[in-house]
Image 1: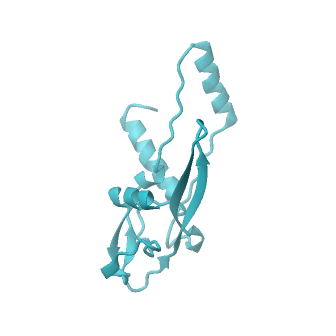
Image 2: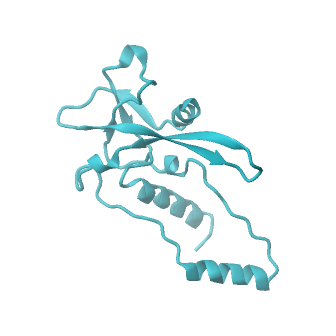
Length: 154
């Protein structure tokens, strides 16, 4: 959990502020799991997620999006790699959603056990799209798409 908080702070995922009148604050929770590595090692993993089911469309978000790859696309890519004798690598973008910038004003409670001592009455104004937000996937895709297009990909 401490690593997760450090990563969120490093990426400036939020800033502490007073909750503006008329706005609501979303709750969050930690999702923990034991991850087994290919070499047999086990490590604990924790991720802070926003309870996105508290969202209201048109207020907290306007558009959602879920990345779905077609199996046909994967088969074509693997066929090209095999025929052309190419090298293929897979990319896992860690903390991918933290790269997406939010367009809406969204407020979240401070994570339990990580509240700032002299600022417990403040809430987190989110700047980055945390896991659990309805628009998190869409915001990450927009940033990734902009980067790939600016890099010359079509």
